Length: 164
Image (cartoon, rainbow, N blue to C red; front, top):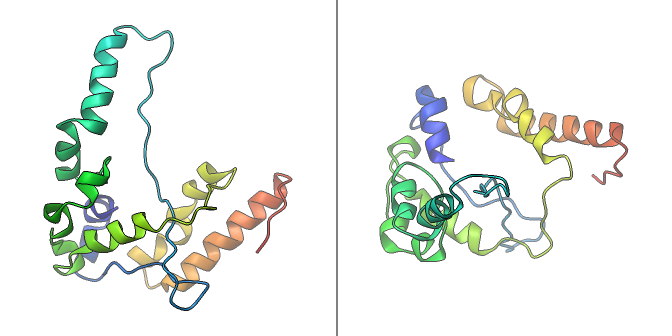
């Protein structure tokens, strides 16, 4: 996420800090997933061995460090828990060592956490709702509420039972 913000909302540099998620229970530390990616090999793809070698490089080999240096989230716990990763200071976040918070959150993802069955839609409206807090005077809480309301409405429209 830091790379996305730094490249997408440059004018907000220094205005934001990273914090653990708010909790339902006082003293809780439950985290959640946000994003991630998958590198897959299509069954009919050509050069299967070469493609597999790239996936291995990107997710378990020397490419992990290359990707992290370019702003990707670590693909290995070794990278995630490394001192080098956690000590990185982000000028965008006022010099904060944001990776320490990211690593702690990643270590505390709730066992029952899952994506919405319509997560792609929810992600697609993020910039139109929460994203306004990054580029306008919209309060973050208002943007989050707008995102929730729009996501709930869409889920109900699609026939899902949505609990608030």
